Length: 376
Image (cartoon, rainbow, N blue to C red; front, side, top):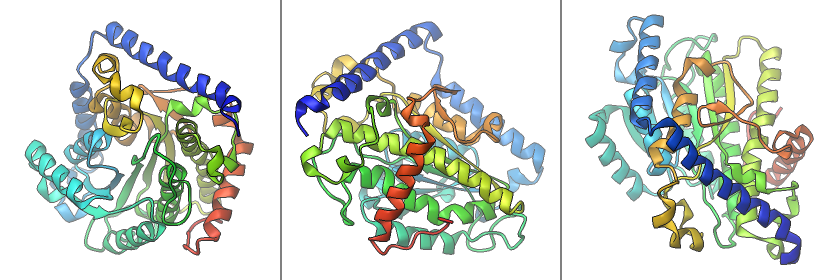
């Protein structure tokens, strides 16, 4: 496909980003730069108070009975800030990261900032390798099995507490063309397929482990720069455009959220004893992180853009809200940004496109011989 054919989508993609940066500046001026940290602290406090009200013994729970959260890409950026808040809110957090070196450095920083060493651990997860994803899920299921009770109301009976939260945060952006270990275009493979397999292979564990489990998928307004679900763009190197393929992968995160929500509703209707699990997508906003390292123009303009880009803590705020707030415990299938539900593009709410993506993903996964649970 020619560059001219891509031009409308490229214009839309860049216009969306530019308008969002202007919006960030206006919002910062309007709010008078209210402390992000004070908001996060308040969310943590309200979570702890709610837990104590529901169960007075919660504050004295032994470490092995803490609720468990998994955060992919927890070693830096928004993932790191979210992990810190979850630790402070009483979770045992699994830092699911590709690099052991980066994860250990993050653990050191978290120990220094929280003094909560017994609540965190690193487990290797390479989303570009479905074998790695499978091994990770097997270990999680061994370490944190579902409660013996079928009502999903108690702590796990293994070496840890019960899984209550999965945050699919890791991602890559605007990378040169490459393929994952299993042959997927890298942005599609890491941002969507890896998280799809991770989520589906842990879905029944979430349902059985908690009466109110939560899944959070990190999407982006970059999906608005995509005018159609072009499945061949993930297969044909000649069609590859790093920005548009990134937007497609973020559209996939959103459509996966829409599809999974409908399936969760159907699964619980068929078996009411399952725990209630919600799934939502979050747009953190344009954030000053190393995610832009493959975007030369943004790297060159970084000193100017930092004035209007969000800090990692600011980007994590809505993620923390969706993970901890009782206000959204029953909200599912939605797209959130800046603490509020937001409209996606029409394509991002198109259930026919969502089904098309689901079918395409499942078909491609069958060719890998990697087992995927809970597809019925």
